Image (cartoon, rainbow, N blue to C red):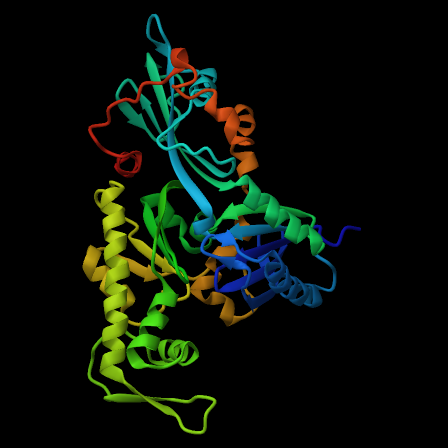
Length: 428
């Protein structure tokens, strides 16, 4: 009997921590039976900086969960940090020609065959996530395929998240060397939305704001469609670093100050806080200065997020509001700051969709780990038409269908009155 039968495993490769969860799939439930968390190493700045260090940290994480479940792990879902991935929007067009007729399934496939991307890269990449976000038929927009509706020109707007082929191979080699021979990579953006958003938030449309260590990620969702995703250069590391420099304390003490006393609310309280250290004497920290440092950095991160959303054409914020995840999402006062800035509903999102074995797993930074388990039930292989599987398996193949290389089949981008596909879709 295969011990992995009915078992799902998820590894979240964060830049500060590696986290793993193991769950047992029941008839109508997913129950977490093991978890582990270790300090990450070997990953820095969106690249694998040291494969040996990466292997050492992963090995520790893998052995910790294996000791809890009593058998070796042979396959897993691996959650890739957003900084490792590339998000692209694209459009495929199918001109019916002749007289108007009802749209058929075959027209959808032919439109997908003619995909043209807004941005293209010469680097060899592989698709991790594929989404058909919006349909346009003779100037009218549809959230679902307009099968049977008469028309002459069909456009399908898509969103993809890809990873460099070399990086994908490197991850596969590291895991294989540790006995995990079969892995499926999923972008953090997808895992986070699955693990943190409620069904109601996804239906109404929501923004997931994942505050990472050095990079934060903004993801726009409507229904089960991920319409847009982007990264912001700022996160928990910068909050800690500001405390370290501004208060003249080392990084370890600064992290402790942030976790135990950190807030962006300058309310009435003591002028100083006392922090226990490994030394004999505790350190006294100027509380007002601490709050000012955290507040200024938080305002900067939120401001960059707002600029990104405006530049991406989000338009009005979705009805589901903003959901915060990540290690620094629980910083007191941050949710209120974002609520006031955007004038919308804001909450801190813990993991959903699985029964947990400890209260610790309710913390927001576990949301992608649980989302990875849920993703394995509905992975990209089940969503892609056969023709797109072939096109996405190697980015170089797509290039032969781009306008510069095949002028006769080049799609013409339809006017959408300057709205982005995400903005249009949110109004439907």
